[in-house]
Structure formats: structure tokens, C-alpha cells
Image 1 (cartoon, rainbow, N blue to C red):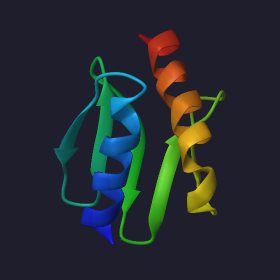
Image 2: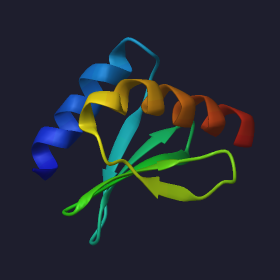
Image 3: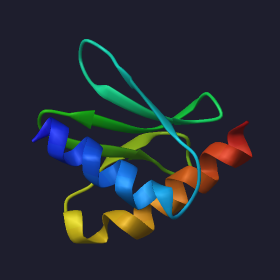
Length: 78
């Protein structure tokens, strides 16, 4: 599941902008300009919201719009 989600997010992000990912012990982080905006855990994907907290994404089909929002929030936070 983890590799599939990372690949899906990277593919989606190529149409939005540049990102990088880093492997951590507990999760894989997706970053924009050094700002963490997505976490991929074994149990699911968590994205940055407008309160600077991470919320779990329940529906993978909605991930593109939510990734775009989290990516833009990372820009604001920088």
C-alpha cells in the first residue's frame, strides 16, 4: 500500500509542482520547499489542512484536490 500511494501522489504532483519525498521510520513524508504537507502511513494518507494539522484522507478518489490544497498550504507556511 505504501509504495502504491507514494507513486500515486508523485504522479498527481507532477501536474501541480515539484515535490520530494523522504522515508522516515514511521511514515513517508512528501515535501514542498522543505515543508511537510503529506504523510503516508501504513494505515493511510494524512494531508496538511488550513489549521496546520494533518487530517486523514478517507477517499482516495478525492486525493488530487486535497493534495493540491495541502501543497498550496505548504507554500503559505514557507
